[in-house]
Length: 397
Image (cartoon, rainbow, N blue to C red; front, side):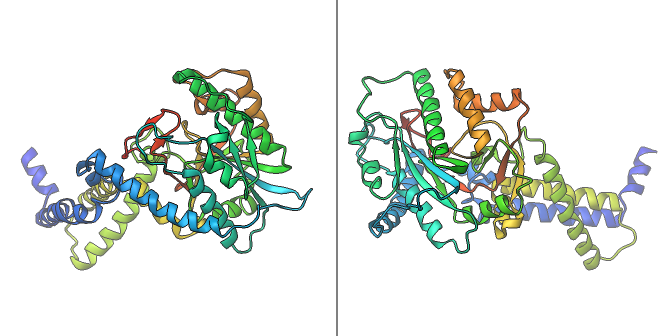
């Protein structure tokens, strides 16, 4: 009886479709995707074929050198500071929080992330036509040996700079608890100094967060045309890429995967029935097999790579609730920055409770709104970590 029911469910047309489906699946996952995806970070194939750490570091260093070449040439052309007239209202004050990296602690290479971030910001501000908002760029130097932080000293001639430590104050290597507490205090200092500059929004950016070329296009659109959506305590413009995949605690990711798979399955089913018209094929088999196929395809490619397609237009960028973790590039309303500063002053950071965890705790306890823009509008380039005082794994940078 069961065998007969199975035969009725899978007729000849169903078996022919399943043969085609198996062939297409093998072709896709064994030939097509490996060829196109093995170089895409966060794809299934890049994880399998991951190179050695030394090779990864070499590649990141070469990329860093290319950016430095552009940055050094661009900065040489600048003659004066990006100064607005006194009393002019600043819509967005951008403060780059900076400390020196790798003062010959691990090798002889100095990455000079600050120069790159400054150059990329200024280049974009100069080339962004028809900006409706006013911007001003600042450096917030929180290095404990400012007199030897030559990179920041040189840039302070063209960029207004806040110096937390007028004189050298570091005496010994800090524990992780003291490091996290200092990082929090640095964040408070930079937030307060930016607030004093007559700004409507405070954009705190860490010095290893490189702005994407679409940053100001998207930022202007969100702050002028979508301001009702941006009524939040803060908005994240960067979240670690490795945490942006479909397999996540974020509730919108799985429905997003299923939704895009159903949409592509509908196109595939329509095309298949045109090429192979039949009234006998079981629609349930056709649809389920097609949806499963596209779910597997999108998982293999990786959400991080698929959301890059949203860069086609500023209208396609996604604004979602912000997940926990990480503050390389956060935009705060004036009131939101004041709230965060007051809270951070009242608590102390320790191991596994850094400033990002503290900010997220405060947000949850007070039921405040925090948002995140996707895809990322910053790239994290900091292989030399100031927090861990070490060189990071190149595959998590």
